Amino acid sequence: MLQIRTYIIPVLVSLLIHAGVLALLGFNWNPQNPTRKIERPNFVKAQLVELKEKAPKKVAKKQPKKVDLTKRRLEQQRQKKLAEQKKQAALKKKQEDAKRKTEEERKRKEALAKKEAEARAREQELQRLQMQQELEQAIAEEEQLLAEVEFENEAQSYVSAITQRIEQNWSRPPSARTGMQCELLIQLVPTGQVVEVNIIKSSGNPAFDRSAEQAVKKVDRFPEIREMPPEVFERYYRKLRLVFNPQDLRQ
Image (cartoon, rainbow, N blue to C red; front, side, top):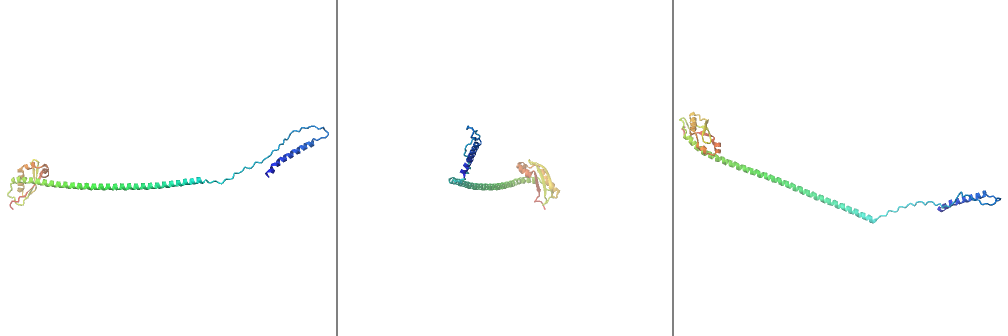
């Protein structure tokens, strides 16, 4: 069918050309006229041209996609390796996290144990200091008590000498009787000098009270006071209380 179409057009052109030539010959034909050569203008120049239809473009058929098995296998291996690497990385991270948590727990327990040990040590130190303080306080109290006893003993030793001097200067009145009691407050200075004598508790017998007061004033000075330690004097003898209570008087 393609070949027939190819020759139709040239044939038609050829027929038209021949028909034109014949028509011209018939129109100008005259047998009486001498033959002359008539030059015919070339109005139409015919040339056979073979017309070819353009062949339609061939549409390339889609070739089935070739599968590169080697590439696929390599890709699978790569993916598998990558997955394994991720798995190992996750496992390593998990192990590191567990190790870190274990270490943190160990440090926490260690810090707690250290803190508790320090607290116990502080408590023990406080108890030790408290016991030491109590012991020192007990020792101090005992030393103070011993000092008190020593002071009292020493003070008492001076009392005997002082009362003996007063008795040597005491003239008892005839009205004095057993059971009478008079209390005096004597003020002294470190030299033993009597500064003042006051009756702070009367016996009820003015003569008896005056006799006791006069006995102290007659002594005037107690030399024993000058020999005693200052702390003993300040504590016991700056203001001395004396009780006159003779037991050898008549009823």
